Image (cartoon, rainbow, N blue to C red; front, side, top):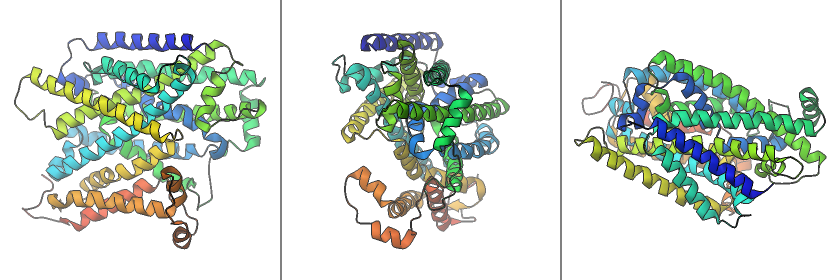
Length: 507
């Protein structure tokens, strides 16, 4: 399909986003940027969060992974369900009770300034790496199928996309993103459904026939009962539960939208409805992966897992319609994760690191500071995307989950210790625990799966023999985040006391 036509639709899509941003950002201020004036419609927030949660990585990596991982990813989704219930009925009431703008303010009130700064730091680190990894993956696909053919360099593509994202987020913030995310989620789901229908028809079958063919190939297997495997069902379910709690409930980007809703009940309805739709959408992505691999097998198509969907959607075998829908759906999946990340990082840095809400100054001065931070994070994103390009590893969904297991562990440990105990902490030692705990978890994971790290780092670690003698083939999977959280919890327990006026604890 002509890259010029695809490029014109990309530009048209951006113009639509800019129009929405212009309308929604009128009369905005710092409060609307950070929390949408606490007046957001819960249904819009819930629908838009689907796009934020899935992202462009889910759009291409989940279907691509069906060929080797079957429907095992759905085990993680089942874990999400449990995690989101914890968020709805434990964390949401806590955040509203304390009337928080930044959720990490809870850590300051509960433990002190070092816990507060540690929470903000690990969120910033997690979001910068995770969001830029997702951004790189989608830009690389757009580059391969559109911009390379137009002789536009990767660096310019990345720069222009980030500038366009800045244009529709720098003024309205959360207030704007709630509406643009709704638009983008619609585009993503429409593209997903239409692509499924078209590919099924191309194989001259129907939904039930395609499902039967997938079942014959073993793709529809959901539960992995091999306890040593990284995808063992209990590992995935437990890991998915804590990934949801950490990456949504303890994540400023996701909670920033939830606490922009008017009241607790609406915010809880947002989480529950979002969860129900998310389960169905992930099933559709897995079903899409199954038919893509069936189609590739029938037509002798071989490509990298993450390139499977774009290779088929943009091939000459289909009309331009599916190619256009794929591109729109892809960028619709990309932007909710990137625009929300930049906005939440700006909010977190301004509130939690700079303390902009506690400093004296005019609204204009605070806005000027916010804009500087916003543009700085965009520049950081650009540098990180170039770094990912240099590494050139597009199969990154496992990397993102692995990295989240390391960086969100301290957040999980801090919040759970604060909620589940009434102990006080030595605030000065919190950083020590939050550095040692993830380091121990990472070391344990490296011993469990040395081949994964050797492949990613392109070096020999010489840990295979040690791994075989200690773990006997057991591979740590998504339970890494739980192990990390437990290490953090135990470390905090070591530096705690029940009551001491020199320590920081419950108010």
